[in-house]
Length: 425
Image (cartoon, rainbow, N blue to C red; front, side, top):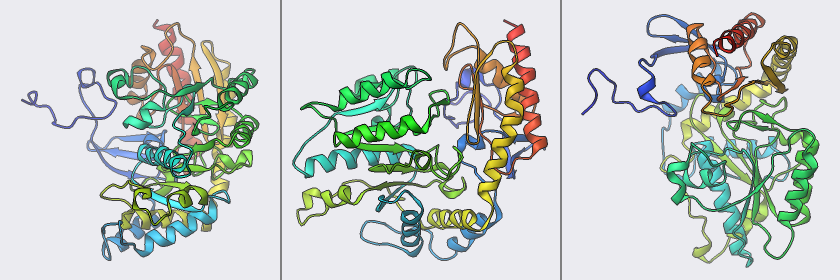
């Protein structure tokens, strides 16, 4: 039986016993959400990192309306459509040169599952059945079984441990410890038991705490994998579409992954869509008269034409509007205010990559289950801000339409929050 007066909705990453009321959002406009009681909430995390240009961005909404009147859905196994074909060609044109094929799915987690299956299929079908996978410490790639297996182990997936497969873990390249991480990767790639692939979030590890490392380290990771013929998988689900300051994070290192995963901002955040892109040799390993070499993966909504139309509209926005200038402006806003937060007692590890800024509150109980997290979340909600701390880590990842005044509102609230929660301990 449903609890008296309760909604039957089970929300993600929500402990309902601790959340007495969940706000109901009626509409979105720009960087703002409007609740059913008329209150306005500044969306400082782009609604889980997906909204790029702003909520209900008119060119994307118009494209969605046009497509719904033409073709809403068709099976993508054995059939195709113009939005899917056009989008694939345009994606090949704007992603790093050498990502030649596009496989559609509907979420970042699924895109990574596809990448893992592509990698294992490649080695099986080329007669070298490598099965071992390498991951970066503190990584997060999703909540399905394969993606949990290649992500950090902990409270998120403890209950599902019996379902997860073993991987090799490379230490995170923290500042000053980059070489230790690279040496570990080199050692793990060497020898007769070479891994099938190494998967990494380029430049920024999102759910792991907005951990950041430099393009030089990313470039060297890629070089090591190339030297040992280990497939390099770039999970750009969060880091893509301008979040790190360039269209894709891998551009800053000048590298081309063998397999790349893109989602979140692919449609500007309007509809769920993801792609896994790969080098021609990955596709060619599955291309055969032998039906057993078919890539056996799909979902019912693979390549949904409405979502593809939204993505095409998003690409037109990137092509015709000054998105790069907006991104640089957001980065400059962060730089103008980050120093003030760094000077606060109890604040450490203030950092920024592109439009993503983060800081940690000093505590003896760091991590996702830190008691600071819920207290800060409640503080921000009372101030009309959608800021969702990762334990003792506060981060800002706003839509590119955010204004100076709105950014000042965020930074002022964070400063007040730091002083409030640290004096209450």
